[in-house]
Amino acid sequence: MIFIQLILAHLLGDFILQPNSWVAEKESKKLKSKYLYLHVLIHTVLSFIFLWNLQLWWVAVLVGISHFIIDACKLSFQTNKNKKNWFFIDQALHVLIIVGVSFYFNEFNFEFLRDQRILKIVMAALFLTAPASIFIKILLSSWTPVPETTGNIQTESLSSAGKYIGILERLLVFTLILVNHWEGVGFMVAAKSVFRFSDLAQAKQRKLTEYVLIGTLLSFGLAVLTGILSK
Image (cartoon, helix red, strand yellow):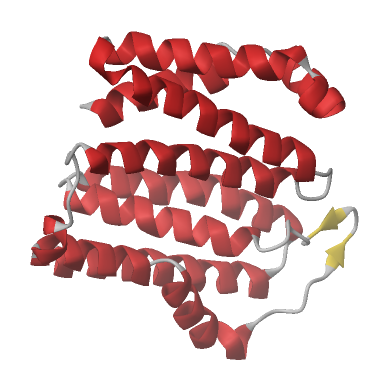
């Protein structure tokens, strides 16, 4: 498949064969950096090698030109504040170019949208992200504890960390159930208990411990129920 071949070339060119020193110089000198052009050349050559078809030379050239344009835009508009955002935009655009080429060669189609099982799994996975977080937050709203400081132990955490941890754990549980690996669910519950509740025990805040315990059980419970209904 052209898609797999071009993705392999992209991964090698963007991550394996691009030293940090090249990235630093590109960010410093931007379009004047020689490594920008060398980086694009490497992508073009890799694409040609992985495709290994003289008739598809234009695909390798297209990948190289598009890579230059995307990287040039990233270097021109990227700042320290939006650097993370531009990284994901940059990668998404590169992948979209590859997907577009794959569509041209009819490697992809939208027939999967007619598969009710796939749609059901996608719907369930989406539910376990933000919607499930909102459900759990509303259910726990009357018990939300007030953050306290006990001695040198602070109960503060990273911004929105709990939300994203919950989303990731629900999706992992959901995936494990779909592939019939229930033992993995038990391992996740045990692992979270060790890491999370040991900290809460040190903080000696019973209300916070109970709040986290209820939230964790609700999160895992929703993921398990959704996984069972989706099978």
